[in-house]
Length: 535
Image (cartoon, rainbow, N blue to C red; front, side, top):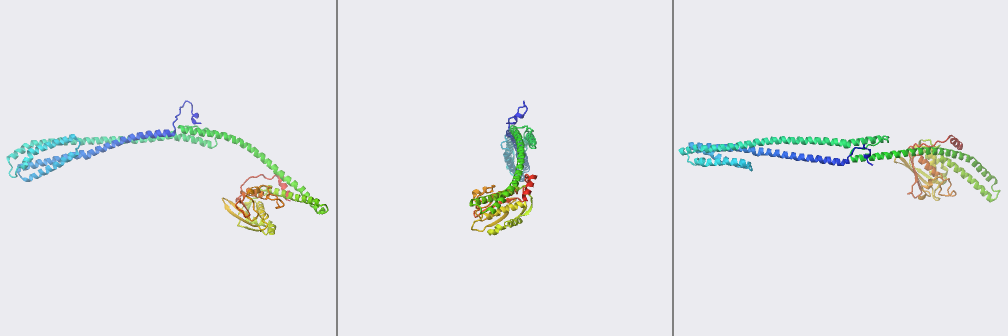
């Protein structure tokens, strides 16, 4: 189920997902930025090319043309002085001018390589120079030194027109080179302006794309997610009837639709759970009333059974004492059976009452020292310890909050079983340990007795379950069941260590403070019954 069903009719929703929108947006932005980048690179390259042409060609060409003009003027000055005076010293400027002319001409040829028009201007200058040198300069320079001759003076006068043609060619060359430099500067300024516009446009487009991207993310992703999160928080706060309205791209609408489906399913399950809880509350109330009635019945029945059973036991014992040996052997056997059965029934009812009192009547939680409790237990077991010669040792035991009477019953049953189920040919040796473990106290009671087979490790904690007949070992089969109930009431567990083979090792845990578990309180009639039973 998607969120399209929740949108108003007549509004056509886009089927594009968030990923597709992002791909298209990022792709378009990259294309635009790439085109702008290529344009910017072209403008940068052009401006750099024009700048290089201006600094490396046009300006050096113009300055070299000026130096070339200076070299030619030096030649003309030197030849004119030599021709008018015949002094050889005037030939030095001419010779130096010729050398400078050749050097500057080569420089211009290199600088203007590929520029046909400017090379043509240079050729025109060179042609005029060659004509002047052949017709005027070289003949004058070849004349002997001394008194100037009229012929040389006449040649100089005729050569002025030839040198004027050089000046005209130089002026034309310099004018065009100057115009080229001005044009290069204009091109550079225009290209720089164009470059600035291009990069300004790039910056503006980047800002616009960023703004469009943020706005698109806000409207297409952030806003739908905020609305979805707001609806989800309202539902999470407990308003499960609040609908989830899917918005945004197709995948976000699908997500909103799935959350809406989950909300509806949770609403149905909550309604079912609430109905089930109401039924369970009613059943729990009925069960609590039934348990209270059963407990009261158990107390009353136990009390009522005690009195007739006490009479049966008393009269069968009187019958045994008065008529024992006077009847036949079978009658004596019957009387013994009756006395033994009555005594066992009294013990069983007494143990059953003690078992039912755990957590109900014996529930006086207080801080106790388990070493003191152990001493009281050993005092109560002193006869059995003396008769068997049992050795009982213990590590230091902790103090904790528990019911003292239940702790005494726990230790008395565990140590009593360790003494009772001893090996016939060995003195009982029992050791008790205690150590903290995961916020609890773990205790072990280890003996060298007959042990417990692993397959009976769970059965021995079930009430009335015995592994031996009453003729072999006495007891009602309630002791370990009572130990389990006491340990669990104090927030722990009890088990038999299956790895220990040289006897029995009982392991159990106790919480420093028992959990607060409300239990059914004894009814007034049951309390009076127990008080009478205690008397």
